[in-house]
Length: 99
Image 1: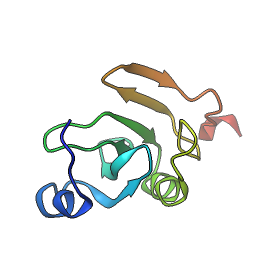
Image 2 (image 1 turned 180 degrees about the vertical axis):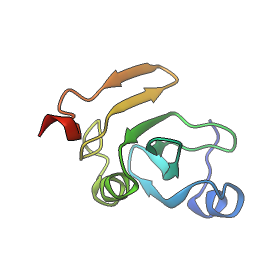
Image 3 (image 1 turned 90 degrees about the vertical axis):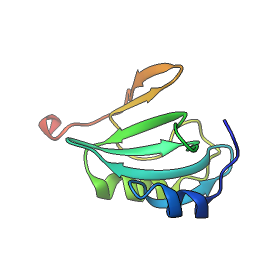
């Protein structure tokens, strides 16, 4: 992957929202998908390393704002992580049906 900047993503990839750089996670941003909102990590000019799927935009936004990059995974109630290396489910995920 090449090294891109937050400004480059904002100027060239409008599908990503709330773009920031997180230490050890690279340039990250949110993208609203059909049924979830993805928190994308290590964005590049034409790809990304992985994404965490959240049920709502607000959950993903809050996780992006508070993640310091020190933990492997972001905070919050993410559902699943998908990457170029594989995928994993959040063992702590709580669905609305769990109430």
